[in-house]
Each structure stands twice: as C-alpha cells, then as structure tokens.
Length: 153
Image (cartoon, rainbow, N blue to C red):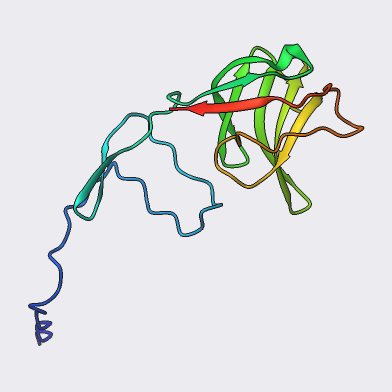
C-alpha cells in the first residue's frame, strides 16, 4: 500500500536552498547568538547577509575616571551566551544573576573570572556592550566619570 501523494500548492514560495553554514534565526532577541568560525553568506529570503567573524568586533573604552580601563578590547571568549572582550586582565563581559543582566568592565585577577574587581556596569540585555548608560556604585572600584564605549565591526 502506497501512501497518497501530497497535493502541490502552486502558490507556495519555492523552497530556499539549505545553507549548512547559516546561523539559525533567533526567536528571542535576548537569547544567546551562535558564533560562526568564518564568514559565510547567510540566506535570508532574497537578501544575502555576511555573518560576523569571531574577533571582528572591537570595543574601545575612553574617558573613564579610572584610566586603566581605557583602551581597545578584542574578542576573548564567550560568557553569558555572548562575546566577551579583553585588554590584558581587563574584561568587558555580560553577566546575569538573580534575573538581572548587566555588562561589566572588570579586572580578572590573574585571568580568574571568579576573582574580579568591578569598575563600571550597565544594566542591559544587549548582545554587545552598550555605548551609553555606564555607571558605578559603592561596590565598584571605578572613579567618575563613567567611560564612553564604542563598538566597531
């Protein structure tokens, strides 16, 4: 017994070619985004977009009252499902704790992320460090003014 053939819908859009290198479309904009080891075209309908290459994002921190945080940060690892950036032991990383998500500029003592000195933070769930909104509180070692942060791709 052969199953009946499925009827063909003449109005259906043609099937798109499957790209094995394409990143899946995220459902939740705050969900961790996949990283792709090298740039590959990602097919999104009729538009072709080039995927980011890990390490292609550079973060520049300037104007901070604590001068040791100023400088250029490059990709170092992934934390909290997003890219983390470093300049020596200084890191810019996103962290979620007790339902609160924030980006932090901190010093990982001897590269140990569990022994940090926090300098500045910004409460946001963005996938990249924000350009504004950085602040500090009594637990931070940073000095005013808070830094300016620029992300370039």
